[in-house]
Image (cartoon, rainbow, N blue to C red; front, side, top):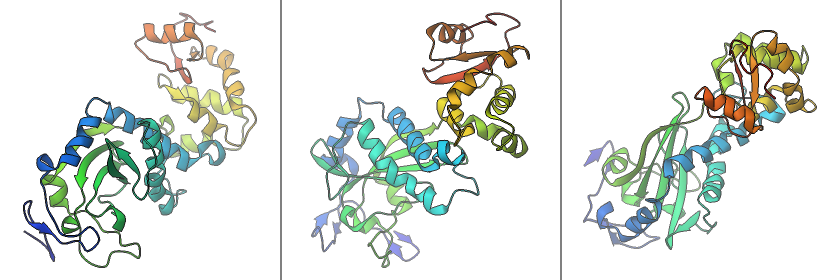
Length: 299
């Protein structure tokens, strides 16, 4: 099968790999190691665990509490930082799935060496040590805030030809991904940072050095009325400032004068009020609701 200069060998043919030695290309349903990994993953919430791991990796790269950044697509984020999401994601996945770090690949799943790869583009860089090995490949689409993953054996015969880069990394052929892999889950939404819902002008005002934190938090909750605000957003708006959480709590009265009730998930009573309005607040979440005087003194 021709893909430009790349001719893909089919399952049943021999993969010539000077490192791993010659071996027969197996389709996923005939590959006992892939099936063992799949059996281990099947009872787990793979999509949910990956969602949390990706969100944590993005937050780590943005470093909002120090930099005030909130959007990985922003012009203040270097391309190299975007690429580093995959490296951080590896460790977040190991932690989320309680998996060991096991060189030369990333981990062992059901006794099978597995490499964990991710891209914010359209393809993955498969390193030489992972050629012909089992990989979990995750694609992250930042513009659509979603992700999906496949389980694939990255046979060298199914990687793009050429010298690759200096580390011997090569991209996975699209046809191999589409026909000789196992989808782990379909497109799954990523949490949206509420600050990305603001216009550029609104965001610049909320994140400005002046006025003080409390006035900017009041502005933020007014602009994002009805949206759940995670703690990480509070820390980003108060980047580099003293005790932003306390400053956020202090705006309850000023919001009340605007007809808004500020709820903080730290307090069970306030979580119950949110739940009564069909809103789930986590222990570190906040929200400003307009409730026509109802529960206006929550706290």
